[in-house]
View 1: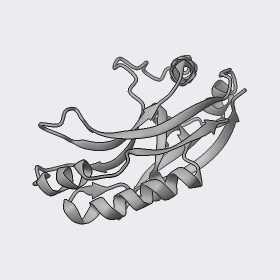
View 2 (view 1 turned 45 degrees about the vertical axis):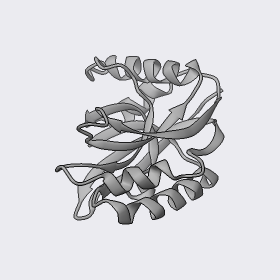
View 3 (view 1 turned 45 degrees about the horizontal axis):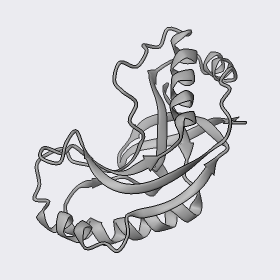
View 4 (view 1 turned 90 degrees about the vertical axis):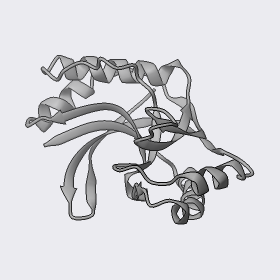
Length: 179
């Protein structure tokens, strides 16, 4: 089973992002993420066969609830050779603590620890092959706002992911409260 942990996005933020992507999608032939898949990943686990052991390990995570803001747009790894188009996440240190604690909890089960710096974001699209981005960049430059909302993160989820004919399909396995 392919697993990851993530924070869900509330409806108000989803609505603003839905409006953004509706405006941007016609401007570039990217692989746009399904709204159902919008989340903020806190730990990518990968293949792991023992769901109950993972759930028990994640029960040990203790981080207070915190506020997040979805704002800004960007490109990974850089704007010159982008592979991912994302909405930014502004968060207090508690989000980093959540990442570190989930990484440690998974590490105790033999899941490899993260080696890259944690960079929270919300993936809006992937770029598998180079495509013209001039019109997309122009429309982004003309946007009235790149602030998509604030919300309180009161929990995180363990998700399972599987590939389907339309791309990845995510299923929530268990919710873990923060606080």
